[in-house]
Amino acid sequence: KPVRHELAGAASHTSGRARKGNSLREAIERETDRPMAKLGWLASLAAAVVVVVTLRSPLAAAQLRPGYYASICPNLETIVRNSVRQSMAQSQISAGATLRLFFHDCAVRGCDASIMIVNSNGDDEWRSPDDQSLKPQGFQTVLDAKAAVDKDPQCRYKVSCADILALAARESVVQSGGPNYQVELGRYDGKVSTKSSVVLPHVDFNLDKLNAFFSGLGLSQTDMIALSGGHTIGVTHCDKFVRRLYTFKGARPQYSPPMNLAFLRQMRGTCPLNYSPTTVAMLDAVTPNKFDNGYYQTLQQQKGLLSSDQVLFADRRSRATVNHFAANQTAFFDAFVAAMAKLGRIGVKTAGSDAEIRRVCTKVN
Ligand code: HEM
Image 1 (cartoon, rainbow, N blue to C red):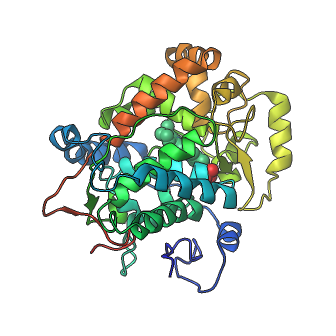
Image 2 (cartoon, rainbow, N blue to C red; image 1 turned 180 degrees about the vertical axis):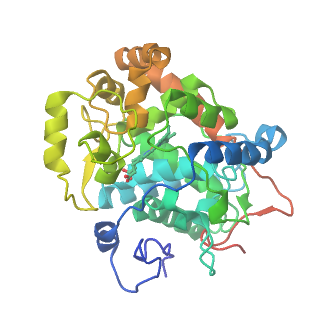
């Protein structure tokens, strides 16, 4: 019987209660984003600093290597590649959902698949407000790949969910037209997942806040700009950028980087004031479904929907890198691959009391 993530089982995001028998599509359609966490950014960053101290684990990261499963599960990469291909054929949005899932996993408690744990008491990462817009398709892609891996008797219960997620993220990039790269492997799965550990960047972050968050993870401004290029695929819901389209009476004035006027009018059509919570728009207006440097050209044209994206072009300190990646796709791909490797080393766990190879990705053994 295939394993399904509770999220894929169509829990209503607003009620948080599982409803049986609903399809993935219905789950998406019902998906309503919660407002971003109420924490102020200062509190978020302070918490990030605390978390990051425990996230840096250079020793464990040093043990990662591409050939880790060469004798344990020699066909691992082919199995995951084929499984992700099937997931992408079933749902166009699975690639973006899977890549984002990898980021949200690594940035919180390190790359240990803690994002996938479903705790019976409801206190787990995926139910935190900042993870409410993660799509079921990302979880399902990993669960399906795990099932495919465990079907091979040589591999059964020997490959961590964290490694399968890292491989599935790579496949999502490659099979969307992005760069191919070797994935370092050998991560163990974490045993802990709590809502309170979730600290992620928000759309209203300016360059300083984005840099502070990523430098807390050991990533540079260039890494951050390259990883933001993950927004070359995938979508965003209206609530994430609607405040940039209208002036709301009484709203706290907030900085918003400039938006192309014709595009702004077009987006008012997509997201009217009474927008539906399920309406989405492409993050890369130039080449929406292709993993390429169109995202940076989108920013040059001032068609970035998320303020945190457009600010990378608006701020003079990051604009040169945006222009460089917009003009030179190879430079973007090289920087993205390097940054993904660094992201994949965050907080890595190896064999020990705080880690294991999970048999079922949604449950601690
Ligand atoms: C720089 C800070 C970042 C912020 C503030 C941010 C924020 C967001 C937001 C608000 C969305 C739209 C969610 C929705 O409405 O459904 C989104 C989507 C996405 N993000 Fe990010 N993100 C950041 C960095 C990253 C990174 C580092 C990656 C991976 C390398 C990434 C990959 C994605 C992908 C692929 C999507 C599309 C998801 C989908 O279509 O389901 N993001 N992000």
